[in-house]
Image (cartoon, rainbow, N blue to C red):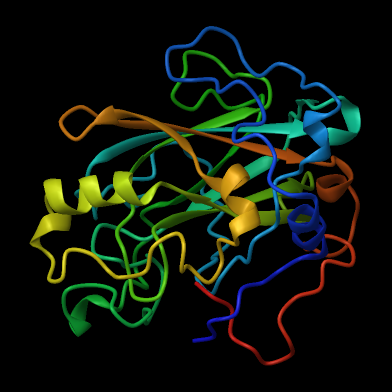
Amino acid sequence: MSTEAHITRRQAVKAAAGAGAVYLIAPALPGAVGGVTALAASACATPTPELTEGPYWVNTMLRRSNVVANSHGSGHQAGVSLHLYINVVDSSNGCRPLDGVAVDIWHANAHGLYSDESSQAAGGGTSSSLGDTIADNWLRGYQITGKDRGLRQRAVHGQVSFKTIWPGWYTGRAIHIHVRVRKLSHGGATIAGYTTQIFFTDAQNDRVLTGAAPYNTRSPQRDPTTNKNDTVLAAASVATNLAKVKGSLKRGFSATFNIVLDNAEVDATGSLGRPNSGGPPPGAASPA
C-alpha cells in the first residue's frame, strides 16, 4: 500500500498560507439549541482540505443515523459510543449552513476492520479469518443536511449526526473517519462532491485503546502510527481536520467536525474530485 498522501492543490495553498484557527465555526454540540451560524468572511478563507477517500469506499446508499450494526440488524459492533455531529457550511455564501447535501461516513471497527470488504489492510483485525466482511455494512451510512434529524429531535440546518463507535487502528494509519459530501440526483445518483477525513488527538485515541474493551484486548493495543507520522494528515491539515471531542469512556463521547466548502463543489456535474485537485499517479494505491 502506498505511503504517499493524496495532496490537493487546495492543501498546498493552505500549507503555504499557514494554519488558521483550530475550529472554523462554533461547534453545535450535543444538546445545544439551534444549528450552525454564518461565519465571518475571513474564516471562510480556510476551507477544509480534501483528503483521499482510500480503498474502502463503498456506495451502500444506507440513509441512516445509527450505523453501529448491519442494516438488517445483525453484526452489532462493540466499542466506545461516539455521537458524531458534522456541520457543512458554504464558503461561497458567507459560510452559511449548506442544506440538501448527502454526508457519508465510513470507518474501521474496534479491531481495525471495514465492513463490505473481502480483504483488509495489514494489521487490521485479530486474525486473518476476520478479514472477509463482504456480507456486512456496519459503520457505513449517510444523512442529508437540513433534512434528516439524526440524533436530534428535528433537522438542523447544515448538520448531520450519527451514532457510531470510536474507530480502531490498523497498520500504517492514524485513527480516522472518512467523510464524503455529495449532491445526489432525484434518482439517487451522485452528481459531484468531495472527501475528507476526521481525526482525533493521539491522547484521546490512547485513552480509548488502553482503557476500554474490546480495544484493550488487542495485541498490540496501539499501532505506532500517530497523527504526526500519518501519511494522509498533513501538518497543515491538523487545524481543520481534528474533531472537537467531549465525554468519557464510561458515558461515551460526542465529537463535532466542521466542513467549509464551496457549494459549487457539490452542485456542478462532473468529477467527484475538486477541479484541478490532482491526485495519485495512475496505478498508485490510495492510502486507506
